[in-house]
Image 1 (cartoon, rainbow, N blue to C red):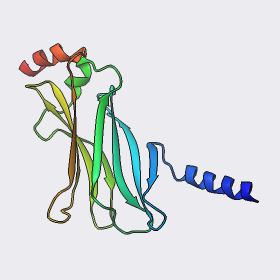
Image 2 (image 1 turned 135 degrees about the horizontal axis):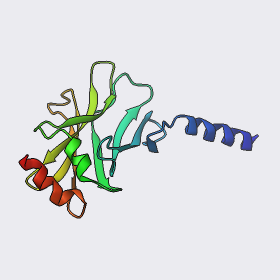
Image 3 (image 1 turned 60 degrees about the vertical axis):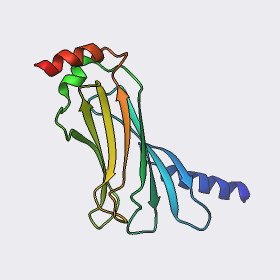
Image 4 (image 1 turned 180 degrees about the horizontal axis):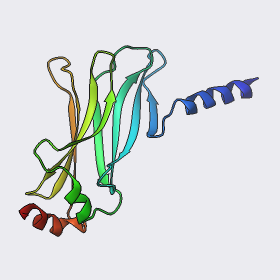
Length: 157
């Protein structure tokens, strides 16, 4: 009977994971809140992978806005990839996830800094919480990639 119960609990925990979820940390026995860790590969600059950690509550109408992001180069970054990205000051929204039924969402943007030839990834909440819009930042320098020197010439066009 114990084996059956353990097997059922393990299968339930596995079905709760989505394709991008790589971690699920419980915050304790007396809370329904967990830290969910999701993986996201940049849709254009596919040599960059970001991991986003955020609090999620299974039985709550609204999730906390706090999140953390870490992005790293995990593959090749080419000049063609950099040529395709939005180079405006506001960049591209590359990820969006609803955090509440009350119009709050978490978004992630990719912004390019041409001066330092760096990709900047910013995750943020779209609704003010406790007087602040929660946000987190991570950078991926192009130094050492095929795109590093080429991106300088791309910006002059």
